[in-house]
Length: 265
Image 1: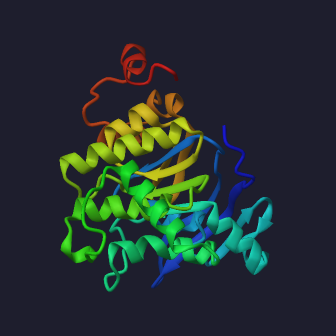
Image 2: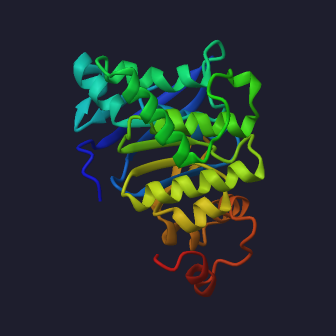
Image 3: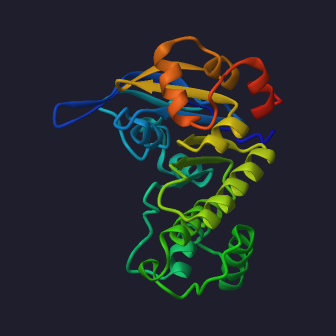
């Protein structure tokens, strides 16, 4: 397991927009060095929770603690160091439209390593894209490549600083079959390396084969949180309904099926 030196905890987090509650009194400590899957119905607050964990979104009330210290009281240098240890893959890829693929990938390197040489940037970009199996023209703009390839580039941008914590929003969204397989393999390899992974997903493979911990959101609250086996064997009707939607190819959650889909649980 990687020692990422960062513990992340949310305490009594509430987020509202236009008088609509998006997250309601959420408390959650991110398990370190394992894969956490966040599941829930559309509109339950999954993406907002992920962005709050990463401190992209600041809550209306409550605290985000990084190493037991409120994020809002951390120094600029401490915040920069924390962000260097985190990678975020957005649901819509969120690439800079007016920059080339190369420029999108060099941005985090220039930000976190201001003295880095161009040769090192080139090598890092090539190594990361080779890892993802991307062979396209890096001087093209995001609008000139497919949605699947944009997602791969978004992964590359998140991985390029070799962060210890990866937050991934809907890796299965807007991608073709080939890219889907590549992304599953990337996540599997990151897990094998002991990275802390927090993923919002409906992907049955990622959930059933890679999840260690599962957080179930329902009506903008954390309805349940526990090990994969605890959640998937629950008799609670809400949990079973949500999990059956995620694991739509698994019709029975008895022990034999569990051993087949997650033999290490």
